Every structure is written in C-alpha cells, then in structure tokens.
Length: 388
Image 1 (cartoon, rainbow, N blue to C red):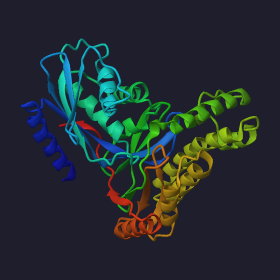
Image 2: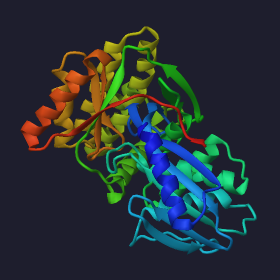
Image 3: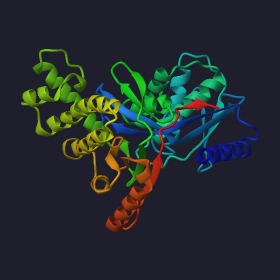
C-alpha cells in the first residue's frame, strides 16, 4: 500500500505539471546486500534482494527535442535537449542518473523526440539501499517502453552502471542494478559477477530482514573508488605471483592470499582480503541455506561485517554499534552493513516472531547512545523492476 500511494501521488503530480497523463510508467525497487561486499567489481559472488520500496518513473512524449525532467518530491524541473545530453556536476545532480541512463538507452537508435518525465520514490536517500540504481532502472524501463526500444536485463543494468561511471562520478559495480531487476518475492538473488548469471534462492518462511538506517553516506566522495583501486592493485600483484591466471580478486583464494601477500602494502593486502573472503562466505552461505542452517548463514553475516570493519575499513562507529547490539538480541541470526559502506544501513537477519522486539531494542539502544533513534523497518524480499 505504501508503494501504491507513491504511485498515485506521482500520477497526480504528473498531470498537474504537464497537463496530460503519462504514456508509460515503470517501477524499480531498492536492494539490500545480504552477503558479498565489494565483490561485484572483483567479478565475485553476491547474495542480495530487491526490497519492498522503490522508485516510479512516468513519461510522455514532449512533442519536440526538449526533455523536461521533474523530481516530484521537490517539484523541481530541469530542461535539456535530446541532442545535447551532458552531466551537470554543480546543480541538481540527481538529474545525472536519468540523463546517463537515457543517453545509454538511445545510443544507436534514431530518437527524434524528447520526453516529459517525472519520478518519485520512498527509498530513504543515503541509506545504502541504492536509490540511485532504482532510479536508473525505472528510468530505463519506462523510456524503453516509451520509445519502443527492446532491452534485456543485463544490458540495461550495464547502461545504469555506465550512467554511474560517466554521469554521476561513481565507479560502481553491477550489484545494485541487477538486484533491482532480478528480485523475486521471498527470494534472495545469488549473482556470479563474472558470468553475470543470477538465480533466486528461497530462504524459507522463518526469516525476515530489519533495515537499520543510521547515518547518511555518499559514495561519490572518493572512498569507494579508493577501495576499488586497491583491489585492482592487489589483483595485479597476485597475477604476477600465482601460477594460474588472475584477472580479478575472484581468482585468488584466502590460502593464496596468506602465502603470496608479501610485497603488498599492508593496507592494500587487507583491502584485498575482504572481497576474497566474501566470495568464500557467499559460496559457503549457499551451502548452509540448502541445509536450512539459518544460524550458520547469519554467522557469516557477522563475519562479513568484521571483515568490513577491520580489513576493508568501510564501516563506521554507528554501523558497528548496531551490529554489536544485534548480536545480543534473541532471534537475531546475523547482521552486517549493507552496500558500499561509510555510513548507510545495517541489514539484520531475524526470525519474524522476534522482529518487533528486535526493532524496538535496536532503536532504543541507538537512541541511548546517540540521542536519536535509528529508523528500523521490516524488509521483505520483493519482485524486481517492471513496467506498469
């Protein structure tokens, strides 16, 4: 019902702004990263899920080469020409996610008419739930429908990734876009980021997630790109040291890391250990889910956060506090930061019967520590992006 109210609000504002109803509407959810952190651009493995909040994009032909784009929460409009699409790094930077996706979508197509576009969502900004990828994917699906352009999920995900790289200035992997597109209700998405093959995995009925939104994060500040550069440097080192081919850290085991890390800067070595260990945790997690071992899967989430905290150093005090508190609560299987890190959210795996008690306990503990409660919400894995 929450998404339905966002949808109705968007339609009303669209008609008020443009004097007509949209010709196409699409929806894309945010995502939680459950296990496998910073492994996507290292061609590794990730468990993720689409969530039950997201972003809607509505569009209609403009009748000219002009494109008018409105952020409906602000009711602020930007205008650009179909033949002059460029990022704006100074003002209204939210437009860059739409511009970059649109530019990638129409590349190679003879598009002569611009669009009237408006978007609205309910994903908390800066929460680590990937509001940017949701915006890219609903933009891509909506405008593909508007212009009659056929596009498959993985190519569309790559268009969104390119928008992040070239328009938004964040050198992200494909995790967020694929998770938004591939989600299924009640399922995790397990993705191999070398082959870009994904599958859905049922977790059963005895689990749900809590999302604890702590402090806002901003990945384009440079920390994300620094971590990626360290991983690439480490991969180049292991490519010289190991006897088998190494193109990414996915090709290195933890045993090999321990033996051949000599010669690496200590910080770079630690950075590399994180995604290498994460790949092994995802594969082990898949085995534990098959056995119904939720406690064992949850322990891998705690292990993942420990690695983020001490090796990759993409956590922060607030995230660490929530994970430490979650360990003390009955019914909690596991907890870890979700997403790029440096702030954002903690995802908590919990038995549904204990979800309310755990939510109150975490919010109260955070308030006692920091003066204000963190926002804790129950998250249900949900269907991925689609047109309406």
